[in-house]
Image 1 (cartoon, rainbow, N blue to C red):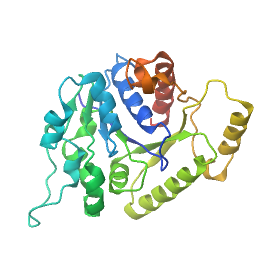
Image 2 (image 1 turned 180 degrees about the vertical axis):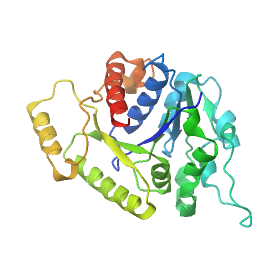
Image 3 (image 1 turned 90 degrees about the vertical axis):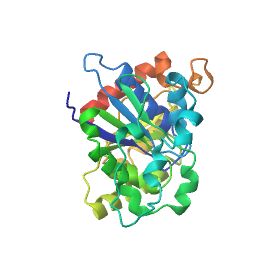
Image 4 (image 1 turned 90 degrees about the horizontal axis):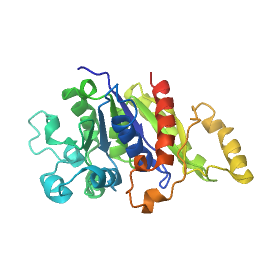
Amino acid sequence: MTRNGKVISLINMKGGVGKTTLSVGIADYLAEYFNKDENYKVLLIDMDPQFNSTQALFEAYYKGDYFKDIFSIEKTVSKFFKPQVNFTEVYQSPPADELVVELTDNLHIICGDLNLVLANKSADYSHTKRLRRFIHANKLKEKYDFIIIDCPPTLTIYTESALLASDYYVIPNRLDIYSLIGIKALQQSIGHLISEEGINLQCAGLIHTLLDDNLTKKQQDLKNRFESMDEVEDLYIFTAYMSLVRDIQVGKQGPLPTRYKKSRDDLHDICLELMNQIQ
């Protein structure tokens, strides 16, 4: 079956906004819960050097040893950023099976790698298009309905690589008095990238995260002020949001939000809204 996949990056220039929880939540929900009749195939690409998405999904689905089975043979995103040994040869994208790990029939992952922290210091920005080439060369949009990229919360070669490969980006946002800073920096950077590279990259919207179900008056006032700011007036703001569920961090069922009913209900609404945004 040939699919018409969409590549979606989740990104914010601030850390601690629930980006990884939302990334793995959307990927897992679309693959395992959303609409069984559609049988969606989902690939998650973990571009964040902290590789928390990888750890969360491996804890839930992978029975082997990450360091032995994956890290030791460089079956990670770091392969995209390795220096080319022979500069007389044209770079060839690796075949998908050298990088993709099948967690379930419908949910696959390209694992993150802590070594990206070190690699970024000597990164060659000519490598930023390698992820896009890899997706194209392996016809991944024909194999997956959704390719979700968990981006680092900083402007790096990995962020640019993810955005160049994407059709859409989503901004997870935690409401606080500093929320606008990261979003303003992000929108400026993406605007420059679109202008420089001539890419068709669209914002699918902003999703509030880590919200209490019953906002206090101060929180509601902050939300209203934030959403009226000039910097976000052109952004679509999801009506659905991710609630603050503390069990995701410490619960016995692990860090996947789909394992908790409240988060699963939130993800259902978010995924419905996301579908409408990327049609």
